[in-house]
Length: 85
Image (cartoon, rainbow, N blue to C red):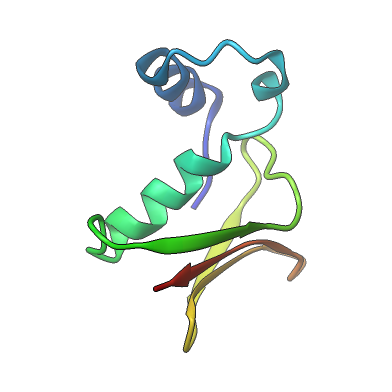
């Protein structure tokens, strides 16, 4: 999974976010929403642990574990954890 400039721009327009940091960094909530939607878990409670920024066009892998989901880049660096309640 990765997020293009166009993906991020569309999301930012919808949520009305004009933070210039998102010219390079994908909004964390955008990532969380995509992971949960992909796994059919949109209406759940969860705790998000942001570890590292995700950059536009950075390839990511999602792993499901006993607590929820772990998002890592191709080098295996944890970018965020989604702990399902």
